[in-house]
Amino acid sequence: MVTLQNAKDVADTIVQHINPRLVTLFGSVARDNIGNDLDLLIVVNDDAYQGRQTDLLLQRSLAPYYRAFDIEPFVIPLSRYNQQIRSGAPFLNAVLKEGRVLYMQNHVNEWLRQAEEEQRTATYLAEGGFYRSACYHAEQAIEKFLKAQLIAKGWDLEKTHSIRRLLALSEDHGLRYHLTDEDVVFIDSIYRGRYPAEAGLLPEGEPDADDAHRAVRLANELLRGSST
Image 1 (cartoon, helix red, strand yellow):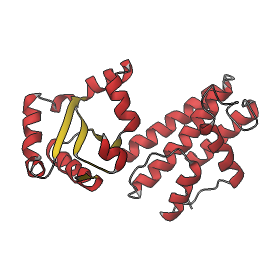
Image 2: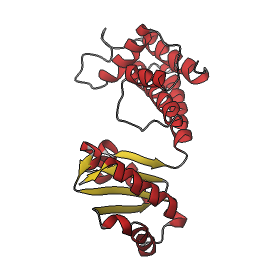
Image 3: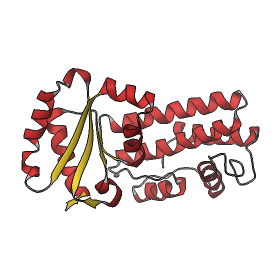
Image 4: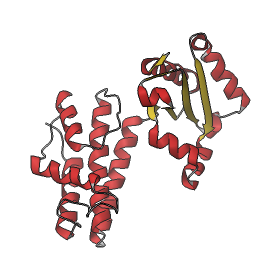
C-alpha cells in the first residue's frame, strides 16, 4: 500500500531532479491517505519540458520507489496547463477539485498574491453594487491569506474553507488575528451560502451594501495588519 508520506517523499525527489512548478497528488491516496498507487500531476516550465527526455529523467529519478509501488506521473508544460485550465478541461478540473498540492514553487508568495487579487476584486465589486460577489471574494481573500501564513509556518495544506478552523490552526502555530467571534460567524456564513439554491448568501438573506463593505473591510484589515 502507498501512504500520503510516500507521496510526499516522491514529491521531494521530483523537486530535486526536475524543478517543477507544481506537483499535485490525486486519486485514492489524495482522497483516503492510502491507496494502491500514486497518481501525480506535474507541471514544469515550458523551457524545462522536453517530452520523452523529461519523462525519462523522471522515471530514472523515481526508480527506487517503483520497487515498492506503482507511480503514474502526468507531466505537462505550464503553457498547456494554463490553456487547459482556461478551457475547462474535465481531467484538470477534477484534479484541481479533488487533488492535494504536494509542492508549489514560491508557494507562500502565490497564496499571498491570490489573496491580494481577491481583495482588489471584492473592493471593485462592492463599489459597483455587486454585493453577493463582493462578499464571496472578500471571504476568499481572508481564507487564502490565512492559509499563506500557515503554510509559511510549515502547515500541510488541507481542504477547508472554515475561517474558524483556520484561526484555530493559526493559534496552534503562534499566529493571532484581530477578528471577533461575530466577524468569524459572518465570514463563514458567506462561503456556506455561496450557491443559488441557498436562501441568500448570508443567514439573514441576500447581502446588502453594508454586508459587502463589512466583508471588504475585514479582508482589508486582515491583509494590511499583522498577526500578534
